[in-house]
Length: 100
Image 1 (tube, rainbow, N blue to C red):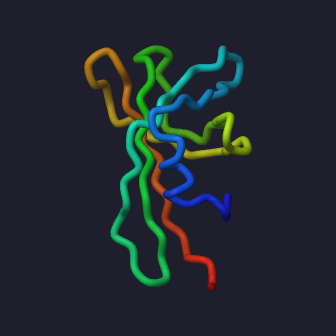
Image 2 (image 1 turned 60 degrees about the vertical axis):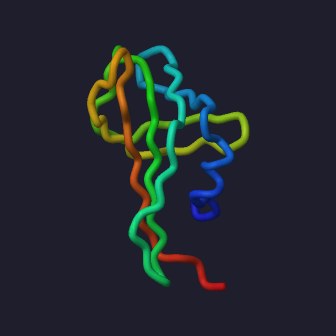
């Protein structure tokens, strides 16, 4: 996870991530936005926004996400609520930048 940055996810915009849910069928979420946060010289901050079906609904928790270009990721997702026929989710990243 330490090698992934907002630019890594920008390359995956508008593509699907498979979410594995214990005891359930895999569900496809689409990465719709990568948003930079308020970061300083030492801190990197960004958010990922995903869109998926309204059902099944994923409560706030850590989920395994699979993408063809990335290694499997365990990401904490927060439901933001429905938008039309879809459900919106967000993952927030805040971490110390790597020394250069």
